[in-house]
Image (cartoon, rainbow, N blue to C red; front, side):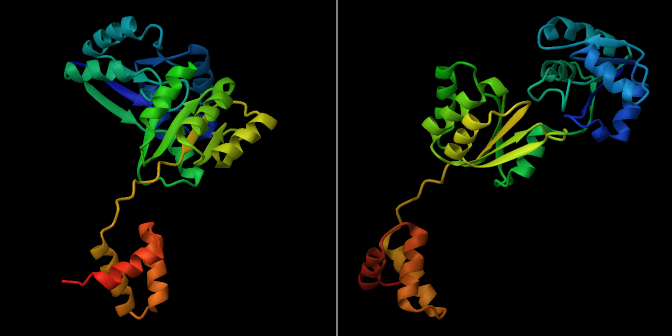
Length: 278
């Protein structure tokens, strides 16, 4: 009878965030696949877990080792997959293994845990309702700027991972390519020195020059302003008349409609004079 693959979320900094279900899963697993046995042993030791078998599965060997794990699962082994921190598959090894299991009809389960993406988004103060996760930006300046150009019209909040030694250069490219938007830098989330810096891109860039950020960093960037469509005179007149009908004085109605539509008050006034509601 085939075994199963269990994706097991692990703490992103604070060991107290490991769930009871995750602890039970790691205790019961026949094999724990991990990026770095030293880091995983520290986690397991903290909870008094003695692994039955540790198996190295990382960015370097995932193609080769993935076939071995598939064979083990097909043979009845229960495999728990962990990354060094967070959820396997999100900017960490795991996607190829999950895909291979799905193709073969093998059972894949998930034990959710802490996520740097969601944690940073929640604490950023930027709109969380619709967002896009871009992972790590390219290392080279040209490639990075081209990637950002592709995001120039993205109106959703954008989340990136970035290493501290490339952070200032990447924030500089954000300013150059995407402009001075609202931004938050979440550093060392859930750890002792957790910090969130909020402001405009230019303000954060100046702050980094004075006080560089250390440790793991998540960038949360405000989306692009939605492109305004040029309103018709009939629409402007209709909106103004609706406000006035509700009791708003004409001058205030003109100002309100003009501000909302991004046009001059004169244009709204002219629309009122020339347009008639059907």
